[in-house]
Length: 440
Ligand SMILES: NC(=O)c1ccc[n+]([C@@H]2O[C@H](COP(=O)([O-])OP(=O)(O)OC[C@H]3O[C@@H](n4cnc5c(N)ncnc54)[C@H](O)[C@@H]3O)[C@@H](O)[C@H]2O)c1
Image 1: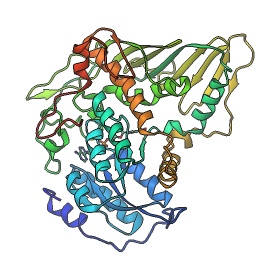
Image 2 (image 1 turned 30 degrees about the vertical axis):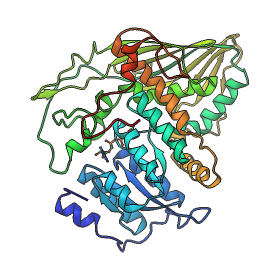
Image 3 (image 1 turned 45 degrees about the vertical axis):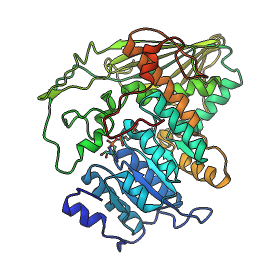
């Protein structure tokens, strides 16, 4: 562990603490095995996953890694409080992997780190629960998939909708043909928003290793809008709404259709409401599009992605979901509002099984975690296997490549290349800032 303020250093190296086990943390998993586990990226979502893993009873949390010493300290303290044992804290995941001999890694850092850290964890022998997207660029994600297969480890991608009861019942309804022949799908996120004023840059907080946070991405001036959580809207670190929500909802289209990739992609959009992108030594704005419409041509149907960060939805609130338009009606698949089928012959609207409780279905991490452990123990592929994550991630990354080039693209999904289009192929990867090396 390096460069942590003294208070954090003392706390994170304190070793076993005396706090009693909290009642909801099971003492052992169904098999009795507790896997030596580390969390890399201990922010909001990483700790959500870890709490579910602890509640499952299948982990011994031996280490936590974050480049923000304050985040690290808070999470180590919380784990200590839950389990009675403080994990070791690390700033550098490479040091963690070298020293801790872990069996499971949870990767929940910002998107531009996922593949690089995921691959390092696999190479260190760990099974990986990684957050979506599986890469910031297509070839990173491809490398993650290739290494997972090469070392024969389980990779569960955090696409919890794959295991959520109402998504599964929606897929059953659609695959049974109850909406007829589906010719078009529209996936969307609608949220309120407005103009974005630039925020003044500020000195890097003492607790944060900003250079390590940026890692392979360009080193830009620190701005408090980026960390924590805000990195999603900065294209150096993520891919905006399409790379965030898009992975979950575009995956519904792949899941329903059984197809692996589109043949043609066209994206349009921009920042007419948020305003011009600003990045200088004094101040900066985010740079992701405030709205985007992407069309994907598949065999036998067309899919459209649409997001807006202004205007809200018909109800004025944020809304996410998918409309499947079929010959027998329109099927709406939502999040906490479940699913509904509107028949085109005016017969009664069909609602899903009312037993599904959508507050509990907000995320399905406990189920996804259990599936991950079962996959490790039985040697099967998990429900949100790395290949599923890779293909869903590609959907959003292909949309972003078209957006950057301002034109349509033809995609050879088997070869994962744009035929005769070297300008587009160049965007399948990015330049890394040294000393980080692009995974191959
Ligand atoms: N599956 C889902 O439904 C879902 C929901 C929310 C978030 N997520 C994903 O989880 C990830 C984290 O999101 P968040 O909202 O928790 O962000 P966050 O900013 O709260 O947490 C990210 C943490 O990673 C740390 N970090 C940055 N660089 C690091 C490095 N090199 N090594 C170790 N730690 C590093 C940051 O300091 C921060 O504490 C994102 O990729 C996001 O897409 C998924």
